[in-house]
Amino acid sequence: MSERIDVSIISSGANLADARLHRLTRALLRAGLTVEIFAPGSVQDAPESLESDNGIVASAGTSLHIRRPWFGSSWSRTDLLSRYHRSRIFSLRSRGRVLYAISPEAVAPAYAHSFVLRRKFSVDFFEDYLRLLEDRRWAKKYFGILGWIAKSDTKSALWFSKRADLTTVADVQVPPYEARNRLVVRNLPDFSLLTESGERDLIPRAIYIGDLRESRGLQSMLRVAELAPEWEFDFVGGIAAADQEFVDQWLMGNNTDNRVRFHGRLAPKQSWKIAAGAWVGLSLLKNTPAFVEAVPSKLYEYMSVGLATISSPLPRCIELIDLSNSGAIESSPEGVAQRLQDWRENPRELDQIRKRARDWAEQNLDSEREYANFAAEMVKLTR
Image (cartoon, rainbow, N blue to C red):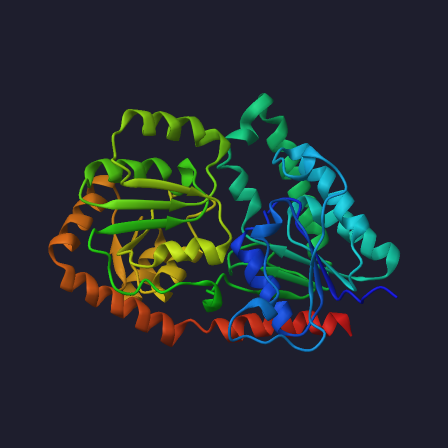
């Protein structure tokens, strides 16, 4: 007899290394649910069973299944057609009592599959995808046809999500604003995935962990690296296809003596090992429609591991850093580089900021309760 599967996570877009996928999965496992995941990417980057974590013991019967592909190259490709292909195949293969679609193009097929088989249906929206599409250069290709298709699919996903048994969103500003059962599950840190920054390295070092693309400050951060030759920089995350050529040319044209390192996309636990010994975390997102109302999850994580943060002047980032007194707001690469220089010359000031960041996160970020509330709602659906 096949094992009971409580929740099938269907991600035709987000990679197995995606941090939110890891956090949500681990919350479900801690609640004792059996989870299967369908997502592109390398299995070695997938969430781990709790049994494999030091100091964490899973509930009896808890297990995690990473489903392998049935098909070839479209398993890992990121183009729109491959994502649509995956979403249909993944939905048909899912066996969970609850189908949890966490990519927009997977929502409609997951809903149809759940309706036919009389299963529960749930949805997660990482961010405001309609606004996000305004930032994507590929959405403007071919006279905007790809963008029109993606926007139509996203509007369809929002329509279905309002009717889901549970709709989770990553922040208060993420639609749908009205749904049958809407729950905000912020991207608060899962501390078991993080590594404390600890004692600073002798050579000052700044890090960035997340997607690397122009709208997320990639070009600005490389300009900072040019202006701050005393600092080292570690960038962890996949580089957007549209920005790869820029990065390649920048590396060829700048002799950084290995001061600037690109580590590629890593699973969250491996990503945050880079934080050990670092001084500062960077978050230089542009003021785009997708980001203007957002709080990047890395701000919470930087504070949690004891890093000072330098952020671009997005409204909610300004509010958070002012409230926690955990870093600085700078609007230009020149300003960021000068701030780094000031902290290099005044490490005591930096250490005070790093301590305040860690203390504030410990006192104000109730990750355990946030993820426990989410898991409790999913447990109800499996009954």
